[in-house]
Amino acid sequence: MSKLEYTPVEEIAKIHADLNRGFRSGKTKSIDYRRDQLLRLAYLLKDNKKRFQEALFADLGRPAGESNLLEIDSTIGQVKDAYDGVKKWSATERVAFSATWFPMNPSIRKEPKGVVLIIAPFNYPVLLLLGPMASAMAAGCAVVVKPSELTPATSALMAELVSTHLDQDLYRLVNGAIPETTKLLELPWNHILYTGNGRVGKIVSRAAAEHLTPVTLELGGKSAVVVDANCDLPTAARRILWGKVANAGQICLAPDYILVPRSFQDTFVAALQRTFYEFFPVDPLKAPEGTMAHIVSDAHVQRLGRLLDETHGTIAFGGQVDAARKFIVPTVVKDVKTDDALMSEEIFGPILPVVPVEGVEEAIDIINSREHPLAVYVFTKDAKFKAKVFDNTQSGAAIANEVVIHLAVDHLPFGGIGPSGSGYTTGKFGFDTFTHLRATIDNPSWVDKLLMSARYPPYDRGAIEK
Ligand code: NAD
Image 1 (tube, protein in one colour):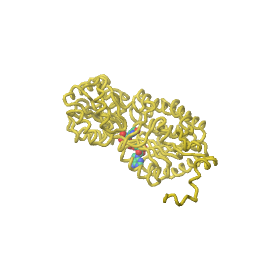
Image 2: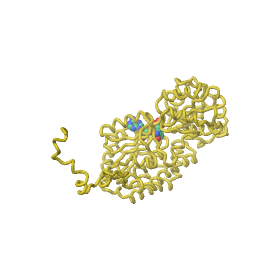
Image 3: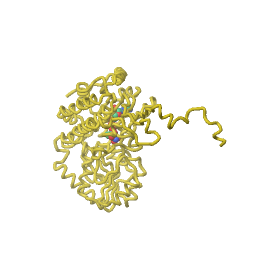
Image 4: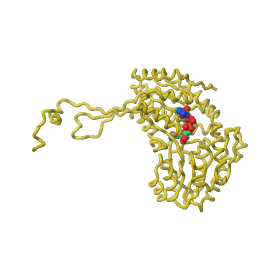
């Protein structure tokens, strides 16, 4: 397995200068060039699938099947999307017909913003690094990617493969932690895309403001799930619990907490418990490693352990923490109040608080009293119930009878609102993030005779008095 080496801080400015030179060479203007590099990126993933599975297992204890489905294949899908879409997306666009302006041939040139920086978090270290990178490559940008230091095996592998598979004049990887990222953030980029927590999102925004650099922020938050008693209960339980055990709940879109009618709480929790036994016929604490992902670091295990110690709710099942293995058994806590420790921050782990409410109005009030999350989920068979929740709340996405997978649905934008982020990634929306819409006209001389002669002085000075 490759060993993680941080990029020397003193080399970072040179990498930035090299990429500026590479970008100015004009290589990325060619769509064939972009497609060739995107193809290399796809093969970087496809040919090294096993190595990625091993690295993700080393960093996160992930089952290989889960890494394939939610990370490696999804990233290949995003690269393929960019490869297939780039020609159409980057074509100059004529604007809608206007009788006044059409002779000037008004159109929009789709131009790369320039040299861009992409900073990724630990939880989906391949998808959230190479997915946006594919969008930026399709847009014709030069790109520096900065993986998380919390996933050393995956970040080391990516450093090796990016340097051997992609054109180093245009695409580079910088590894490191806070000093390296701080150095990167001192430089003038043409766009920064940051995925991670809001605290660092503010650091990134402040640094970008120094150079008036546009920023896309893909952040997190507490994504709420409103469960109606009139729902398909086994499906709801299966999908919700899956959203908490996949990657051990370390998913920005994971269902963070449940709002359920008080009279339905025990029925719902019992369904979750039945699902837990279906998912884990062997006690997950005794099952071999690779049955379920573990928590990324000791610090996060301690944070989650503290939340469990401090909760005033009742642990319905789970609750065991194996600190040595960084493993936490999927845990459901019921009778949680809105001021509980479990409601104080994004959980980002396999712990699910259930908050009983009197009705849908109270559920809506609770969601609206908090920061806008990345998703609001509803489980119901009642279209009016769904509409009521969606129409009276705000969030990055509004999802009924499903969790998490909307990120993978073709042609949907992915992004937060307010504290859960700003801007969009994936597909054409990702391409647009890294693209400047350069307005252009070309006005023939004869237009002056027909339309535009009145703009030239001398003007009719008596016109106002008339
Ligand atoms: P992390 O700790 O891996 O940090 C993210 C990146 O920020 C890393 O590359 C890290 O090196 C850098 N960083 C950390 N501290 C820094 C500092 N002081 N200055 C400059 N750079 C710094 O991951 P994280 O932030 O804990 O990731 C989890 C968060 O990300 C959760 O809130 C989750 O919801 C969110 N997230 C959002 C999305 C999305 O698409 N919206 C996806 C995944 C995760």
